[in-house]
Image (cartoon, helix red, strand yellow):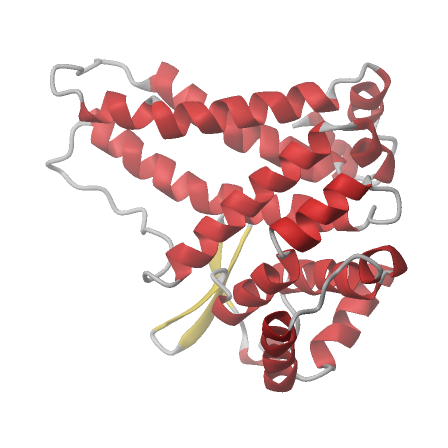
Length: 267
């Protein structure tokens, strides 16, 4: 909370400085992945156990919410290049983490978008907690997108293994294009355009619909860094498949978004 307040008022950011000084960024990344594994391997088992009916699910909720808290903190502090550099070898694990989240986000978009927050009167506390975890997963993925964009800002100082993981193993440019195609943070309800921002959906005024949203801007900036920086250009193998995907989206959306992303990046 303090890190977000410091970033909001644009004053000194002691939390970010303390994390770097005491070498705690790798610890945060390790904790993030540990909680992710717990949610994948342990939490579903707890939800399936029929005789596990705790009267108070708050302790379990705190573990589930811990992942969201860490990724939120990382999104706040990774804006600074020195934080990314202080992550050292764990930045590779963080890239893998962000890739997993964005892949799930694209897959979810193809299946009808994020789940709604409506509860059922017949559901038990564990089922309600599982529903909350699904809703939280959507927000975590959007935070992971921002973290990934900040990592691409440091492409000139990343290790060769990290660049290879982003460009060759995961082919992030093509994944980012898929995100732009599906745009899971936008939807139409009752003929009105809505965008997800600040943990809830907002209706976009007609006069604002042609403007680039913050999340669209994050994707375009990441693409700009991965495709046009000299370090990435020297290592990205532009196959015929990748070229087809990139050109298809370019023809669909034109140059406007790239120019807007360059403007946002300058700001």
